[in-house]
Image (tube, rainbow, N blue to C red; front, side, top):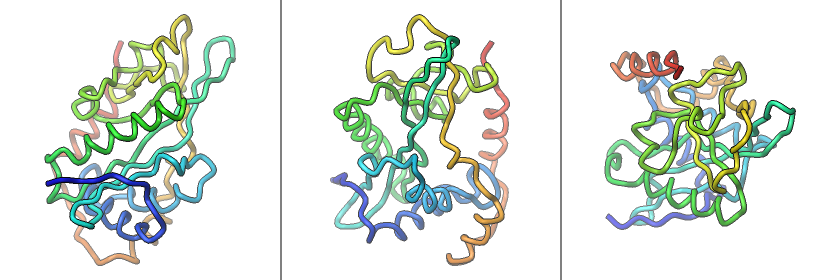
Length: 212
């Protein structure tokens, strides 16, 4: 499989929403909201158009990654801009074949070229530490309450950018999903059965886990 990566264009929009729905359905909760997030993110002020990529195999879009603006604030009140990606989606039949990793590597390189100083995400360390991410505690970056969640992950694009201070991370408000609006949006798609997977329990545990 030889994939190529390019920027998303408007004609990709519906396909990307379908891919995202397939990738996340029943993964973290019964059903999913990530395809609605993709839909609303494109029109949000924090959306970064230049870091919106799709993976293509044989002229077929099979995956995508999207970025938003975020920021950190230190103990003196100084604010520094960061960026955040998510969701990262790959069609189930193409998962575990390096597509997601290729999207992440490509977007990290492009973000670095564009002069961004750090990427901060909430995600599973098993998926992202291989790309150089560390827990926020290793860089003095906490959540807004001063805690260090298991899944708060930081990648410095400019080495030492967080040194000498303690920081609190603030993601874009676009990630605060209106679940009723998401449910209404989902009616536009082919019906799928909601159900339980053990990954939902793993996700619940990870969301409640913090470093001391």
